[in-house]
Structures are given as C-alpha cells and as structure tokens.
Image (cartoon, rainbow, N blue to C red):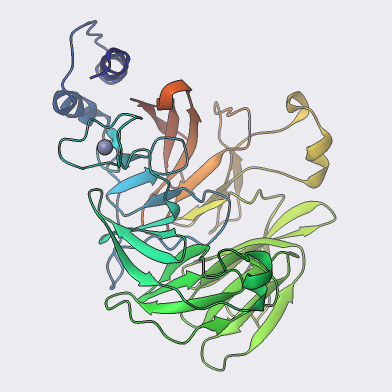
Length: 381
Ligand SMILES: [Zn+2]
C-alpha cells in the first residue's frame, strides 16, 4: 500500500475521532481500513430511507448538473470527482466504489472500478446503471453486466454523431421503467426483464434534460425549450422557453425558467394546470426533500461579477410556510453541488476536488431536511 495513502487514512481517522469524541489519538501507525471504518462509525448520519413499492431507485433527472452523484439509499456515490467513492448513509464512512476482491485500488490498476468512467450513473438496490456507448450497463461494485444494447437511431443522430449514431446519453428511472435516452429519443425498458418497448421519437434536435412521472416524460432541448410527451396519447406539448431543468417530487413537477436573467422555480401538478411560482432566484442545483428546498442564487448578471461580489449563501425554503432562511455559518465560497433524493431525509453539499495522482480530498456536508446545522464528512483516501 502506498505510504501517502496510509498517512491520509490515519489522519482522517484521527480528525474524525478528535472531532467526535474530543480526544485526539496521534499516531503514525498503519490503520487497517476495517479498523478505521469502525472508528469512523461514530459520525452517525442515521439517514431515514423511504422505499418505493418497486424498491429503491434514484429518481434523478438527466442533467449535466450533478451528473456523477447518485444514491441507492444505503450509500451516496460520487462518480464525478476523479476517483469513484461512496459514503455510508448511516455511518458517514467513506470508501472507494470498487469492491473487486484483491484489487489494490490504485491508479495504475487495470480494471479498478475506482478509476473507471461511469456515464450517467443511477443507483438502485440492484446496483448502479450507467451508459457505455450504446449499452445500458449494471454494476454491483465488482462486475458489470450489459442489460440492453441499442440499435435505434435517426437522421439526427447520424448528423450529430456520424461515427456513433447508436450511442446513448443517459439512464433515467421512474417506477418500473428504465428510460434509455438517446440524442433525440428514448426507449422504455422494463426494470425487471429489460424488455424494450418501441422507441419514442421526442425531438428533431438534441435533448439535454429528461425526467419522467407516471403519465408523462418531460424533456428540454438544446434551445432550452421545455416539452412533455403524454404516455397515454403520445402527444407532445410545448410548456415553455428558457427552461434549464425539470424534476419530480411527490406528484408535482418542478422546473427552473429564466425570466429577465433570473432563474425562477415553478411547479405544477399537471402540465395543463396552473404553474405556481415557488422561489425567485433559484440556482439549477436546488434540492428538495421532506418538504424543504435548499438552494443558492444565480442570476445571469452574476456572470460578470467577481467572486468577492457574489452571494454564495445557502438558503432553506419551507414548503409548508413559504419561509426562507439563510444557513448561518456556512460559506462555500462558490456554487456548490447539492445531492439528494426525495427517498432520503438528507441533502448533501459536495466540495470535492481532484488532486494529483488520483487521490481526492474535500468535504461533504450533510443536512437533515429542514435543519440549518450540518455534519461534515471528510473525503480523503
Ligand atoms: Zn479496485
């Protein structure tokens, strides 16, 4: 084992020990990862997990924002920070994603899953689904299996990806359906048998965002136009312009639309019903869970401002009362990645940077929905 890694492990274990028990144990000795994991358990996140009838799945939309972060109710996974790792949602323990027996988990190791690229990962209690060229793959941390191979494409794919027209862009899961999303279409797959239904042609341009509920799939194209496709009558309806993301929470669809440079969060129950304004100036990486929304500001006028002039405050919106609170004492100094799932009672702000040699360090803050205090998880290994 690399010496630098041993030091990092013992340091982070000590830091956690001293923070949690008020007692520092300074040691230079090698800490066995199993031993370290037992010590780190004192962190205790105690996440409450709701399970859907279909079992646990991350219902995250297709989006560039937070594309690499996902949760299966047991772990929060980050596939977007240079080294793939996971955080235990009960204990706060951080470990690599790779579970291959005997793998040394180092940068040079062929096939180590800590350093493999996972396209559009979506975690479920069966494993992590992801895209590899024209295939939907499933990985349990040791082996990867292909569950679907796509052969469908249109003239649009031929035009924008002449060498790989069959390649897929994302996996989105809703209920018992896995949507394999291509440039301009989606293919619904049965989540248990992986049997494919007919491809649904959605657009003649590229789709950049995609989400689904029981009745519709929603998509935003490269021109920021927002549409829904009815699964019952196959009709496509345009819902708005300048929309940057949509996603579902407890039977409602939330989306962000820019108006005169300000991102506004709206919601509706049915596309044809009233669209209610929820939050003015809500950055695309908002997080909703247990009746609360965490978010930062980001109007287009911010683009020209220097970092010193910008407001990076994290705000908390109470959906029952409409009250907005700032999170005191939390200054990320930048726009943060926020990871969450409506199926868990926590949101996580992620500040993890790549570092030389494939080792990563940074921190994750865990907020219990509705609270402004938080627990800090050191990500260092
Ligand atoms: Zn490995």
